[in-house]
Amino acid sequence: MVGAPPPSGAKLLEILNVRVVGSGERVVVLSHGFGTDQSAWSRVLPYLTRDHRVVLYDLVCAGSVNPDHFDFRRYNNGLDAYVDDLLSILDALSITRCALVGHSVSAMIAILASIRRPELFARLVLIGCSPCFLNDGDYHGGFDAQEVQEVFDAMTANYSAWATGYAPLAVGADVPEAVQEFSRTLFNIRPDISLHVCQSVFRTDLRGVLGMVKAPCVVVQTARDISIPAIVAAYLKAHLGGHTTVELLPTEGHLPHLSAPSLLVPVLRRSPTNMVAGTCIDQ
Image (cartoon, rainbow, N blue to C red; front, top):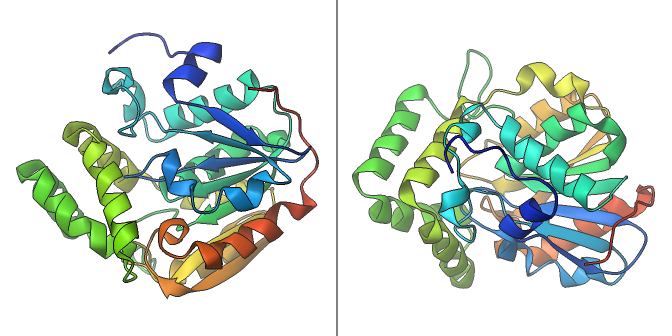
């Protein structure tokens, strides 16, 4: 599909496995992070569907999506094409207002989408979010350039070995079933796609546009995250343009929706309560 025009409408909904579940006037969109797919939300989903319409989809890079649909040229320009996909989904579903919950790279996607189409987003919930993963002067993003290159080299040399080592470090907390689940979805991604996505994420720097976000934001950070220093949450609070609160979860790891859903659910239940009702077609 290299060079093919981007899919839209019903075709895109099919490709990205879009689902709409639950009931209620208020709409919540769940957008997963790197190394997972929409199944990562399974532990928190039942607490949202009883009074919200919930939209789930898979990023095109997820292992649950046919890799033939990953256009390396289209998804090589930062995160813009991922934003295009998200907005196309919302338009295809006739959603006019929603709360958007984004994890990791999808938190970055959420920031960009809210800048491009601010009328769509009543609230952003940003889980494990960083505007820039690279250290830069006084800014501590968590990684030096040499460390990032070592990650790329390890992924290239032996993806299986890298994924096996990375999964427990990312989960952090001693939750074997969460490590097993993250390992499953991480291994499902074709190695060249996984590397390409990682390179795009580490090249992305959103620090200069944070002030353009006008939607209220909730930044969710764990007490210890191998990917994101705790100070990044304070940076986001200081620089995001919309009213921003920080929720610090007393647990470890980059994937609290997998490892500590009981801590995350109250945050998610609180966050959409001020959301203006949206509309969504039935699926």
